[in-house]
Amino acid sequence: MAYQLETLENGVRILTEKIPVIRSAALGLWVTTGSRDEKAAESGAAHFIEHMLFKGTADNTAAQLAGRMDAIGGQLNAFTTKECTCFYVHALDSHLMEGLDILSDMFFNSNFDEEDVKTERGVVLEEIGMYRDDPADVCNERLSEAVFKGTSLARPILGKKATLERMTGQWLKEYMHSHYRPDRVIISLAGSYDEGVVEEIRRRFSRMEPGKSPRTKKASYTPAITLKRKATEQNQLILAFPSITAGENKRFGMQLLSSILGGGMSSRLFQEVREKQGLCYSIYTYGSSYADVGLFCIATAQSHETEEQAISSIRRVIDEFLTDGASQEELDRARELSKANVLMGLESTTAHMNHMARSIIQSGSILSPEEIIAAYDAVTLEELRTLARETFRWDQASLSVVGKVAPEENYVRLIR
Image 1 (cartoon, helix red, strand yellow):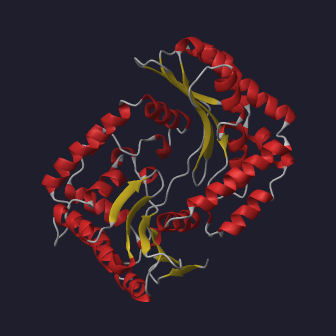
Image 2: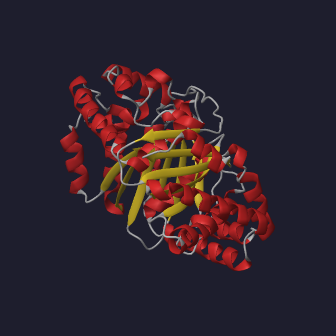
Image 3: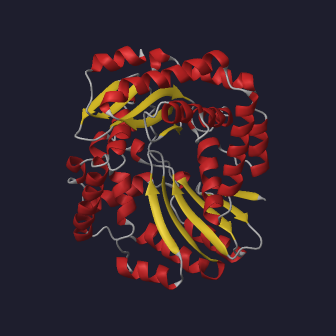
Protein backbone atom coordinates (compact mmCIF):
# COMPACT_ATOMS: atom_id res chain seq x y z
CA MET A 1 0.00 0.00 0.00
CA ALA A 2 1.77 3.14 -1.23
CA TYR A 3 0.63 6.66 -0.44
CA GLN A 4 1.84 9.48 -2.66
CA LEU A 5 1.93 13.13 -1.58
CA GLU A 6 2.52 15.91 -4.07
CA THR A 7 2.49 19.65 -3.33
CA LEU A 8 1.76 22.01 -6.21
CA GLU A 9 3.60 25.31 -6.53
CA ASN A 10 0.62 27.22 -5.11
CA GLY A 11 0.45 25.00 -2.00
CA VAL A 12 -2.38 22.61 -2.94
CA ARG A 13 -1.57 19.08 -1.75
CA ILE A 14 -2.58 15.98 -3.72
CA LEU A 15 -2.75 12.60 -1.97
CA THR A 16 -3.14 9.41 -4.00
CA GLU A 17 -3.29 5.70 -3.26
CA LYS A 18 -3.90 3.01 -5.86
CA ILE A 19 -5.80 0.00 -4.57
CA PRO A 20 -5.65 -3.06 -6.86
CA VAL A 21 -8.54 -5.39 -7.79
CA ILE A 22 -11.42 -3.01 -6.97
CA ARG A 23 -13.38 -0.98 -9.55
CA SER A 24 -14.26 2.20 -7.65
CA ALA A 25 -12.50 5.30 -6.39
CA ALA A 26 -13.18 7.96 -3.76
CA LEU A 27 -12.17 11.54 -4.45
CA GLY A 28 -12.24 14.04 -1.61
CA LEU A 29 -11.72 17.78 -1.72
CA TRP A 30 -10.68 18.86 1.77
CA VAL A 31 -10.27 22.41 3.04
CA THR A 32 -8.66 22.88 6.46
CA THR A 33 -11.08 25.56 7.55
CA GLY A 34 -14.13 25.07 9.73
CA SER A 35 -16.21 26.77 12.38
CA ARG A 36 -13.21 27.51 14.62
CA ASP A 37 -11.81 29.80 11.90
CA GLU A 38 -14.88 32.05 12.07
CA LYS A 39 -15.25 35.24 14.06
CA ALA A 40 -18.30 35.55 16.31
CA ALA A 41 -20.25 37.49 13.66
CA GLU A 42 -19.30 34.87 11.04
CA SER A 43 -20.58 31.87 13.00
CA GLY A 44 -21.97 29.21 10.66
CA ALA A 45 -20.25 30.51 7.50
CA ALA A 46 -18.22 27.38 6.71
CA HIS A 47 -21.25 25.11 7.04
CA PHE A 48 -23.46 27.50 5.04
CA ILE A 49 -20.87 27.53 2.22
CA GLU A 50 -20.85 23.71 2.25
CA HIS A 51 -24.61 23.80 1.57
CA MET A 52 -24.35 26.49 -1.11
CA LEU A 53 -21.87 24.56 -3.24
CA PHE A 54 -24.68 22.09 -4.00
CA LYS A 55 -27.11 24.82 -5.14
CA GLY A 56 -25.94 25.33 -8.70
CA THR A 57 -23.08 26.65 -10.82
CA ALA A 58 -22.72 28.80 -13.91
CA ASP A 59 -23.41 25.75 -16.11
CA ASN A 60 -25.53 23.46 -13.92
CA THR A 61 -28.56 23.89 -11.70
CA ALA A 62 -28.71 22.02 -8.39
CA ALA A 63 -31.01 19.46 -10.03
CA GLN A 64 -28.61 19.01 -12.95
CA LEU A 65 -25.66 18.42 -10.59
CA ALA A 66 -27.66 15.77 -8.75
CA GLY A 67 -28.85 14.25 -12.00
CA ARG A 68 -25.33 14.02 -13.43
CA MET A 69 -24.14 12.19 -10.32
CA ASP A 70 -27.10 9.79 -10.32
CA ALA A 71 -26.50 9.12 -14.04
CA ILE A 72 -23.09 7.61 -13.26
CA GLY A 73 -24.36 5.71 -10.20
CA GLY A 74 -22.07 7.70 -7.93
CA GLN A 75 -22.38 9.32 -4.52
CA LEU A 76 -21.79 13.00 -3.78
CA ASN A 77 -21.74 14.41 -0.27
CA ALA A 78 -20.02 16.82 2.11
CA PHE A 79 -19.53 17.64 5.79
CA THR A 80 -18.20 20.45 7.96
CA THR A 81 -16.38 20.09 11.27
CA LYS A 82 -14.83 22.61 13.62
CA GLU A 83 -11.51 22.34 11.76
CA CYS A 84 -12.21 21.26 8.18
CA THR A 85 -14.73 21.01 5.35
CA CYS A 86 -14.86 18.08 2.92
CA PHE A 87 -16.65 17.50 -0.39
CA TYR A 88 -16.35 14.01 -1.82
CA VAL A 89 -17.36 11.73 -4.67
CA HIS A 90 -17.47 7.94 -4.75
CA ALA A 91 -17.83 6.43 -8.22
CA LEU A 92 -16.74 3.64 -10.55
CA ASP A 93 -13.32 4.18 -12.08
CA SER A 94 -14.90 4.46 -15.55
CA HIS A 95 -16.92 7.50 -14.35
CA LEU A 96 -14.32 9.12 -12.10
CA MET A 97 -13.52 11.94 -14.55
CA GLU A 98 -17.19 12.91 -14.56
CA GLY A 99 -17.10 12.94 -10.76
CA LEU A 100 -14.08 15.24 -10.86
CA ASP A 101 -15.91 17.51 -13.31
CA ILE A 102 -18.86 17.81 -10.95
CA LEU A 103 -16.75 18.37 -7.85
CA SER A 104 -14.47 20.99 -9.42
CA ASP A 105 -17.43 22.79 -11.02
CA MET A 106 -19.03 23.12 -7.59
CA PHE A 107 -15.77 24.28 -6.04
CA PHE A 108 -14.80 26.87 -8.65
CA ASN A 109 -18.08 27.99 -10.22
CA SER A 110 -20.87 27.96 -7.61
CA ASN A 111 -23.41 30.78 -8.09
CA PHE A 112 -24.30 31.81 -4.53
CA ASP A 113 -27.57 33.10 -5.94
CA GLU A 114 -29.50 35.25 -3.44
CA GLU A 115 -32.72 33.28 -3.85
CA ASP A 116 -30.81 30.04 -3.25
CA VAL A 117 -29.19 31.59 -0.17
CA LYS A 118 -32.63 32.45 1.21
CA THR A 119 -33.93 28.94 0.55
CA GLU A 120 -30.89 27.18 1.96
CA ARG A 121 -30.84 29.40 5.03
CA GLY A 122 -34.24 27.89 5.85
CA VAL A 123 -32.79 24.40 5.43
CA VAL A 124 -29.92 25.19 7.81
CA LEU A 125 -32.30 26.68 10.38
CA GLU A 126 -34.34 23.47 10.23
CA GLU A 127 -31.12 21.51 10.75
CA ILE A 128 -30.38 23.63 13.83
CA GLY A 129 -33.89 22.94 15.12
CA MET A 130 -33.40 19.21 14.58
CA TYR A 131 -30.27 19.19 16.72
CA ARG A 132 -31.90 21.30 19.41
CA ASP A 133 -34.62 18.67 19.69
CA ASP A 134 -32.02 15.99 20.47
CA PRO A 135 -30.93 16.15 24.14
CA ALA A 136 -27.68 14.29 23.41
CA ASP A 137 -26.68 16.88 20.80
CA VAL A 138 -27.66 19.75 23.11
CA CYS A 139 -25.58 18.20 25.89
CA ASN A 140 -22.51 17.90 23.66
CA GLU A 141 -22.88 21.42 22.22
CA ARG A 142 -23.24 22.99 25.66
CA LEU A 143 -20.14 21.14 26.84
CA SER A 144 -18.08 22.74 24.06
CA GLU A 145 -19.58 26.15 24.80
CA ALA A 146 -18.60 25.84 28.46
CA VAL A 147 -15.10 24.34 28.37
CA PHE A 148 -13.90 26.38 25.36
CA LYS A 149 -15.63 29.60 26.44
CA GLY A 150 -14.07 32.69 24.91
CA THR A 151 -12.64 30.80 21.94
CA SER A 152 -14.01 29.92 18.51
CA LEU A 153 -14.21 26.22 19.43
CA ALA A 154 -17.07 27.16 21.76
CA ARG A 155 -19.32 28.17 18.87
CA PRO A 156 -21.63 25.68 17.07
CA ILE A 157 -20.67 24.45 13.60
CA LEU A 158 -24.15 25.30 12.26
CA GLY A 159 -24.06 28.88 13.50
CA LYS A 160 -27.00 30.82 14.90
CA LYS A 161 -30.07 32.40 13.36
CA ALA A 162 -28.81 35.91 14.09
CA THR A 163 -25.52 35.39 12.25
CA LEU A 164 -26.97 33.35 9.39
CA GLU A 165 -29.61 35.98 8.59
CA ARG A 166 -26.91 38.56 7.89
CA MET A 167 -25.11 36.39 5.31
CA THR A 168 -25.72 37.24 1.66
CA GLY A 169 -24.57 35.33 -1.40
CA GLN A 170 -21.85 37.88 -2.14
CA TRP A 171 -20.64 37.83 1.45
CA LEU A 172 -20.44 34.02 1.47
CA LYS A 173 -18.58 34.06 -1.84
CA GLU A 174 -16.02 36.53 -0.48
CA TYR A 175 -15.64 34.51 2.73
CA MET A 176 -15.00 31.37 0.70
CA HIS A 177 -12.40 33.17 -1.44
CA SER A 178 -10.52 34.43 1.64
CA HIS A 179 -10.56 31.11 3.53
CA TYR A 180 -10.42 28.47 0.78
CA ARG A 181 -6.81 29.30 -0.04
CA PRO A 182 -4.52 26.77 -1.79
CA ASP A 183 -2.38 26.24 1.32
CA ARG A 184 -5.53 24.84 2.99
CA VAL A 185 -6.67 22.60 0.11
CA ILE A 186 -5.99 18.85 0.06
CA ILE A 187 -7.17 16.54 -2.74
CA SER A 188 -7.35 12.92 -1.60
CA LEU A 189 -7.85 10.12 -4.16
CA ALA A 190 -7.98 6.40 -3.33
CA GLY A 191 -8.98 3.35 -5.34
CA SER A 192 -8.89 2.50 -9.05
CA TYR A 193 -7.93 5.39 -11.36
CA ASP A 194 -5.61 6.22 -14.22
CA GLU A 195 -2.93 8.91 -14.27
CA GLY A 196 -5.06 11.06 -16.55
CA VAL A 197 -7.32 11.82 -13.60
CA VAL A 198 -4.37 12.86 -11.45
CA GLU A 199 -3.01 15.05 -14.23
CA GLU A 200 -6.41 16.71 -14.58
CA ILE A 201 -6.49 17.38 -10.82
CA ARG A 202 -3.08 19.05 -11.12
CA ARG A 203 -4.22 21.18 -14.05
CA ARG A 204 -7.43 22.37 -12.44
CA PHE A 205 -6.14 23.13 -8.96
CA SER A 206 -2.81 24.65 -9.99
CA ARG A 207 -4.83 27.62 -11.26
CA MET A 208 -5.75 28.64 -7.71
CA GLU A 209 -4.02 31.90 -6.86
CA PRO A 210 -1.24 31.48 -4.28
CA GLY A 211 -1.87 33.14 -0.95
CA LYS A 212 -2.16 32.47 2.75
CA SER A 213 -5.48 32.14 4.53
CA PRO A 214 -6.26 33.80 7.90
CA ARG A 215 -4.48 32.25 10.89
CA THR A 216 -6.48 30.15 13.33
CA LYS A 217 -6.55 31.47 16.88
CA LYS A 218 -5.53 29.12 19.67
CA ALA A 219 -8.08 27.59 22.02
CA SER A 220 -7.81 26.56 25.65
CA TYR A 221 -9.73 24.37 28.12
CA THR A 222 -11.38 25.62 31.31
CA PRO A 223 -13.18 23.26 33.72
CA ALA A 224 -16.91 23.97 33.76
CA ILE A 225 -20.31 22.66 34.78
CA THR A 226 -23.23 23.46 32.50
CA LEU A 227 -26.84 22.50 33.19
CA LYS A 228 -29.84 22.77 30.88
CA ARG A 229 -33.38 22.11 32.07
CA LYS A 230 -35.38 20.24 29.43
CA ALA A 231 -38.51 18.10 29.62
CA THR A 232 -37.05 14.66 28.94
CA GLU A 233 -37.49 11.16 30.31
CA GLN A 234 -33.75 10.82 30.89
CA ASN A 235 -30.95 13.13 31.92
CA GLN A 236 -28.24 13.28 29.24
CA LEU A 237 -24.81 13.52 30.80
CA ILE A 238 -21.25 14.03 29.54
CA LEU A 239 -18.32 13.98 31.94
CA ALA A 240 -15.17 15.43 30.32
CA PHE A 241 -11.47 15.85 31.07
CA PRO A 242 -8.75 17.74 29.15
CA SER A 243 -6.87 15.32 26.92
CA ILE A 244 -4.40 15.02 24.06
CA THR A 245 -4.36 17.06 20.86
CA ALA A 246 -4.87 15.59 17.39
CA GLY A 247 -1.87 13.77 15.97
CA GLU A 248 -0.03 13.10 19.23
CA ASN A 249 1.77 9.77 19.49
CA LYS A 250 -0.18 9.15 22.69
CA ARG A 251 -3.35 8.71 20.61
CA PHE A 252 -2.82 4.96 20.33
CA GLY A 253 -2.62 4.53 24.07
CA MET A 254 -5.60 6.83 24.56
CA GLN A 255 -7.65 4.74 22.13
CA LEU A 256 -6.86 1.60 24.12
CA LEU A 257 -7.66 3.39 27.38
CA SER A 258 -11.00 4.50 25.95
CA SER A 259 -11.73 0.97 24.75
CA ILE A 260 -11.03 -0.56 28.16
CA LEU A 261 -13.13 1.97 30.04
CA GLY A 262 -16.05 2.46 27.68
CA GLY A 263 -15.42 1.00 24.24
CA GLY A 264 -17.87 -1.89 24.16
CA MET A 265 -20.02 -4.33 26.09
CA SER A 266 -17.02 -5.79 27.93
CA SER A 267 -15.73 -2.36 29.01
CA ARG A 268 -15.54 -1.49 32.70
CA LEU A 269 -18.14 1.26 32.60
CA PHE A 270 -20.65 -0.80 30.61
CA GLN A 271 -20.24 -3.79 32.89
CA GLU A 272 -20.50 -1.77 36.10
CA VAL A 273 -23.04 0.95 35.36
CA ARG A 274 -25.35 -0.94 33.01
CA GLU A 275 -24.90 -4.69 33.54
CA LYS A 276 -24.35 -4.81 37.31
CA GLN A 277 -26.41 -1.84 38.47
CA GLY A 278 -28.89 -1.33 35.62
CA LEU A 279 -28.55 2.45 35.79
CA CYS A 280 -28.51 3.17 32.06
CA TYR A 281 -29.10 1.67 28.64
CA SER A 282 -25.92 3.03 27.04
CA ILE A 283 -22.61 4.34 28.34
CA TYR A 284 -19.47 4.93 26.30
CA THR A 285 -16.27 6.95 26.07
CA TYR A 286 -14.82 8.96 23.20
CA GLY A 287 -12.17 11.54 22.44
CA SER A 288 -12.49 14.92 20.72
CA SER A 289 -9.06 16.12 19.64
CA TYR A 290 -8.20 19.37 17.91
CA ALA A 291 -4.97 21.01 16.78
CA ASP A 292 -4.23 22.58 20.16
CA VAL A 293 -6.60 21.04 22.72
CA GLY A 294 -8.53 17.83 23.34
CA LEU A 295 -11.22 16.18 25.47
CA PHE A 296 -11.78 12.71 26.88
CA CYS A 297 -15.52 12.22 27.39
CA ILE A 298 -17.82 9.75 29.12
CA ALA A 299 -21.42 9.92 27.87
CA THR A 300 -24.54 8.27 29.24
CA ALA A 301 -28.22 8.89 30.04
CA GLN A 302 -30.28 7.84 33.01
CA SER A 303 -33.33 8.83 35.00
CA HIS A 304 -33.21 11.87 37.25
CA GLU A 305 -33.66 9.61 40.28
CA THR A 306 -30.61 7.44 39.56
CA GLU A 307 -28.32 10.17 38.21
CA GLU A 308 -26.33 10.64 41.42
CA GLN A 309 -25.77 6.89 41.76
CA ALA A 310 -24.62 6.70 38.12
CA ILE A 311 -22.10 9.55 38.51
CA SER A 312 -20.77 8.01 41.72
CA SER A 313 -20.36 4.66 39.95
CA ILE A 314 -18.51 6.28 37.05
CA ARG A 315 -16.17 8.01 39.47
CA ARG A 316 -15.54 4.77 41.33
CA VAL A 317 -14.63 2.93 38.11
CA ILE A 318 -12.17 5.67 37.15
CA ASP A 319 -10.61 5.83 40.61
CA GLU A 320 -10.16 2.05 40.63
CA PHE A 321 -8.40 2.24 37.30
CA LEU A 322 -6.10 4.97 38.62
CA THR A 323 -5.19 2.72 41.54
CA ASP A 324 -4.93 -0.68 39.88
CA GLY A 325 -4.45 0.06 36.18
CA ALA A 326 -5.53 -2.36 33.44
CA SER A 327 -5.06 -6.11 33.39
CA GLN A 328 -3.11 -7.83 30.65
CA GLU A 329 -6.33 -9.46 29.47
CA GLU A 330 -8.02 -6.06 29.12
CA LEU A 331 -5.07 -4.65 27.20
CA ASP A 332 -4.97 -7.63 24.84
CA ARG A 333 -8.70 -7.42 24.22
CA ALA A 334 -8.55 -3.66 23.56
CA ARG A 335 -5.65 -4.15 21.15
CA GLU A 336 -7.51 -6.75 19.11
CA LEU A 337 -10.63 -4.59 19.02
CA SER A 338 -8.67 -1.54 17.85
CA LYS A 339 -6.71 -3.51 15.25
CA ALA A 340 -9.90 -5.05 13.89
CA ASN A 341 -11.49 -1.59 13.66
CA VAL A 342 -8.48 -0.33 11.69
CA LEU A 343 -8.40 -3.21 9.21
CA MET A 344 -12.15 -3.57 8.74
CA GLY A 345 -12.55 0.19 8.59
CA LEU A 346 -10.19 0.37 5.63
CA GLU A 347 -12.19 -2.02 3.46
CA SER A 348 -13.64 0.80 1.33
CA THR A 349 -12.09 3.41 -0.94
CA THR A 350 -13.89 6.18 0.96
CA ALA A 351 -12.24 5.04 4.20
CA HIS A 352 -8.82 5.10 2.52
CA MET A 353 -9.48 8.58 1.15
CA ASN A 354 -10.54 9.80 4.60
CA HIS A 355 -7.58 8.15 6.31
CA MET A 356 -5.04 9.84 4.06
CA ALA A 357 -6.51 13.33 4.37
CA ARG A 358 -7.18 13.20 8.11
CA SER A 359 -3.68 11.86 8.78
CA ILE A 360 -2.04 14.70 6.87
CA ILE A 361 -4.28 17.29 8.55
CA GLN A 362 -3.75 15.96 12.07
CA SER A 363 -0.17 14.72 12.13
CA GLY A 364 1.44 15.65 8.82
CA SER A 365 2.16 12.03 7.87
CA ILE A 366 0.29 8.88 6.87
CA LEU A 367 0.81 5.62 8.73
CA SER A 368 0.16 2.34 6.96
CA PRO A 369 -2.21 -0.16 8.62
CA GLU A 370 0.86 -2.21 9.60
CA GLU A 371 2.43 0.81 11.30
CA ILE A 372 -0.80 1.58 13.15
CA ILE A 373 -1.07 -2.00 14.39
CA ALA A 374 2.57 -1.89 15.50
CA ALA A 375 1.82 1.32 17.43
CA TYR A 376 -1.05 -0.40 19.27
CA ASP A 377 1.16 -3.41 20.02
CA ALA A 378 3.79 -1.13 21.54
CA VAL A 379 1.46 0.28 24.23
CA THR A 380 2.27 -1.07 27.70
CA LEU A 381 0.27 -1.44 30.89
CA GLU A 382 2.41 1.20 32.58
CA GLU A 383 1.80 3.62 29.72
CA LEU A 384 -1.95 3.17 30.13
CA ARG A 385 -1.75 3.92 33.84
CA THR A 386 0.36 7.02 33.17
CA LEU A 387 -2.12 8.27 30.56
CA ALA A 388 -4.99 7.69 32.98
CA ARG A 389 -3.24 9.67 35.73
CA GLU A 390 -2.49 12.50 33.30
CA THR A 391 -6.10 12.57 32.10
CA PHE A 392 -8.37 11.88 35.06
CA ARG A 393 -7.71 14.86 37.32
CA TRP A 394 -10.93 15.58 39.15
CA ASP A 395 -10.06 19.24 39.74
CA GLN A 396 -10.07 19.59 35.92
CA ALA A 397 -13.27 17.63 35.30
CA SER A 398 -16.21 19.20 33.46
CA LEU A 399 -19.84 18.15 33.32
CA SER A 400 -22.73 18.86 30.95
CA VAL A 401 -26.23 17.71 31.92
CA VAL A 402 -29.51 18.16 30.04
CA GLY A 403 -32.87 17.14 31.47
CA LYS A 404 -34.44 17.39 34.91
CA VAL A 405 -31.26 18.80 36.36
CA ALA A 406 -30.45 19.12 40.05
CA PRO A 407 -28.94 22.25 41.67
CA GLU A 408 -25.36 22.89 40.55
CA GLU A 409 -23.92 22.30 44.03
CA ASN A 410 -25.04 18.66 43.82
CA TYR A 411 -22.88 18.10 40.74
CA VAL A 412 -19.96 20.03 42.21
CA ARG A 413 -20.05 17.71 45.21
CA LEU A 414 -20.08 14.60 42.99
CA ILE A 415 -17.22 15.44 40.63
CA ARG A 416 -15.00 17.73 42.64
